Image 1 (cartoon, rainbow, N blue to C red):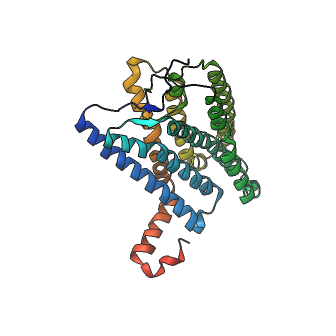
Image 2: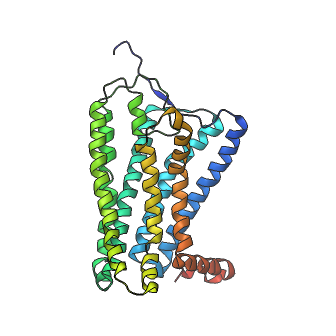
Length: 318
């Protein structure tokens, strides 16, 4: 161990060796990142400024937009910098910091989706008590719990990394730093770290899955009892967007973290990683904005006020 050289930098995986392809990827990923940032920021702005969007559902949606904007900002700017400079090296402390925030924002989204499932459950199964139960105090407590509880996993993983030494190889098979890749470049026995990862990940996954999908089990039972087809369609339409986001998120996580990364699937893993890290944060606001009449109406009204009637722009989206 004493004769081994400790690495201070990590070489990230280049997405292509072709210079023309690199320029194309840079433009595509830059457009994706800008669209992700602007669309999520627009949702936050509408939720904050439009009085008729001051409801629990859009309060959670605003937090989801902030999460997607933050998660994309952890990976995309570094990827764009590496593409344009072709310098795929990142310092080890920066690599660990990126890993921390990737896990933190991913964990936060898992718990936030659970809170949104609970919100839909109350709205459909207990509509008469919805406004009383899902008060602003309840919403703020749930969101505070989401942001604080999501810190547990990355803090535990980061503290466990302190027992490891990194002596190479300094190449990781990913364009951003994640925990499994850091284990691969360690020259210390990582069995304890892997055990901690599996334990915390399983506990977190079980809790999040149960609290996300059990409310929908109750929702399906309630909707099944509705006799009219219009009533069933109206009930399902209120949670279709959330179900779509949940399906995309859990599908991406399953393929990234639970499908073995073999050489035969290396290209597929790269594509899935790009979808998980860059495309998913863009899809969420598009899914909600396309399916939400309230959001589309608020956007149209905001455009009308600020473009067609600039003298009244300060009155807000009421």
